[in-house]
Amino acid sequence: MSSARIQPSVAAAAASALSSTVKHSFSFKFPFPATATPVVSRRCGIRRTLTVAMSTVASNPLQVCVKASITVPDKLGDCPFCQRVLLTMEEKNLPYDMKLVDLSNKPEWFLKLSPEGKVPVVNFDDKWVPDSDVITQSLEEKFPDPPLAAPPEKSSVGSKIFSTFIGFLKSKDPGDGTEQALLNELTSFDEYIKDNGPYINGEKVSAADLSLGPKLYHLEIALSHYKSWSVPDSLPHVRSYMQAIFTMDSFVKTRALQEDVIAGWRPKVFG
Ligand SMILES: N[C@@H](CCC(=O)N[C@@H](CS)C(=O)NCC(=O)O)C(=O)O
Image (cartoon, rainbow, N blue to C red; front, side, top):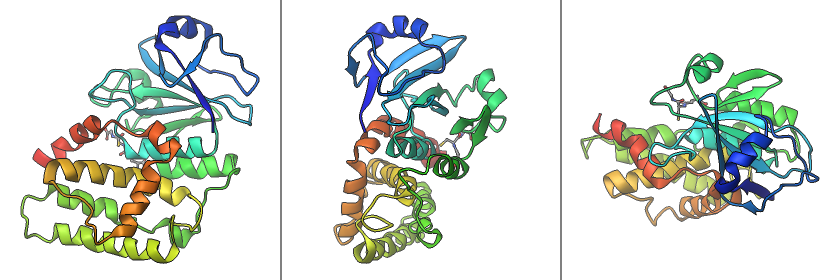
């Protein structure tokens, strides 16, 4: 998909020109050049990045609250569930408007629309909906084209990798079996991809990959940093799968900064 982001140098002009909802389609004319830099506007204490995706479907951008970076101002943060939702919107060519939320100091406006205080939350028909499972399901129902749903038996492929990764990351005892538990899950996944790949649902990327991909990205960065560990060469299909997902345009556009992933896991490692 093509996308346009608006330069910070014109942010002030853009912020006054654009309301909180940016209406656009292919016919929308930007008064300034499209670049890969986000626009950040501040209004009523709401820090907002306007990301404008050109879609063949002319519709209002979806409003999505996501975690803000803790290392760089006004950047997307390191929430794999937020990235899953953003990836789904990107793959469905849906325009969206991100609201960056500082989770270490949750603003009042955010707690009003997300009483649990969690991201992601997305506004559908004037209702704020939490939970990436629910949000991605709703996106599939409301915007079925292109279809991303995988059959239920495939949706759970690789689903234990994230929890076993966290177990190993937190472990302080090299002999407690947590590394082996992760290796077992990765080995099953390697065999699955070898027989069914290159993606979980076969030839095409599906919602199952958009859920697992961000978690593998966290696994790679956090285990490399905190344990000097990487997916072994003996699991080539996992490695090529990760490479394929991490280099997708939509993934590159929505991924967290490495510094944020490292900082985000620090309390789990040392806490
Ligand atoms: N099951 C939820 C999990 C969302 C979640 O745990 N988000 C984290 C950020 S990665 C969060 O908002 N944490 C804030 C908090 O717990 O205070 C989903 O899939 O959306």
